[in-house]
Length: 113
Ligand code: FES
Image 1: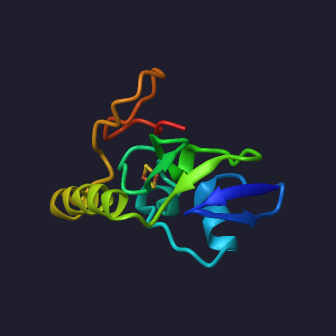
Image 2 (image 1 turned 90 degrees about the vertical axis):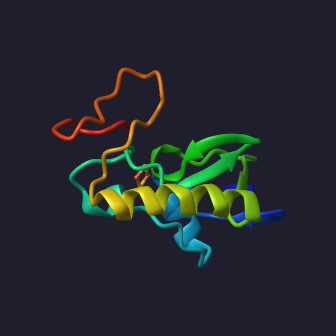
């Protein structure tokens, strides 16, 4: 599968489950604390990226052919750092994710995606 990843066409495996794993294949690390914890996924927002120009969580986004993904631009890094700071300061994966999918990102919830 070919993605347009940080301004370059890059090939990833067809079975990458999400953009965190797709980036890893390309040697790019996306911080993803709640995904890595395996307790709850899609709540902290630290894995913020842009997909086709719109904000997305890398851990919740399945790669698709031709997708335009922005991971390392200054604006994306700045947003990710703000969320990481919140995560670090509160010591919890809970942060209102703001999505409207009916998810449960409460402290006792199962997550967003
Ligand atoms: S790692 Fe993706 S939202 Fe927390």
